Amino acid sequence: MAIISRKEAREILAGLLFETEFHAGEDVNAIFALAVEDRDIPADEYISRGYFGVYDNLAEIDALIGEHSKGWKTERMSKMSRSILRLCVYEMLYEEIPYRVSINEAVELTKKFDDEKARPFVNGILNSVKNALEAK
Image 1: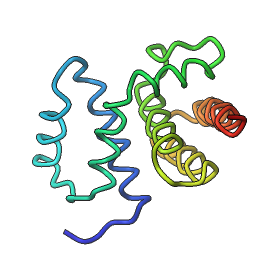
Image 2: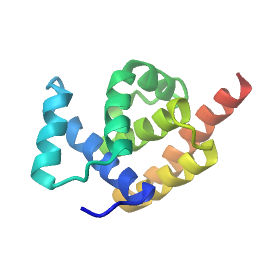
Image 3: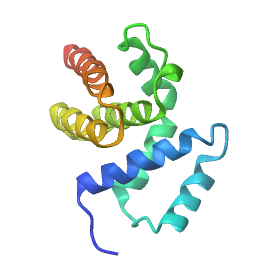
Image 4: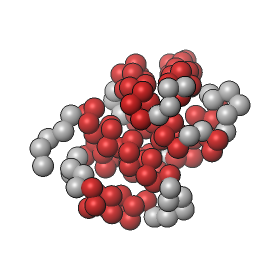
């Protein structure tokens, strides 16, 4: 399979995180392996690292999202918005990617895969997270 761009990898990763939302409580290793096999997902280090990075740090990521979502519990958010938020917050915490790049990519994913009303919601939460991280 051809080498993919970071943008394509993010789209695949957001889709995997979204799929996993429908299998709550199941083994993420098995879900990932099955998805890779069934969908012929490329062996991309970023996809694997990001997927397991989100789930290895899910409590911290969700707590940060919840802290900045102004009264919205993460379980009330759409599965796609929650998946995109988790991906971006993971990048902000654990990847060496400028915050503004991660946020912009998250907004683009939201435009492509979620309801149009979700874009300002996702953008607002992520900017609040960014401001808090920069203040540390």
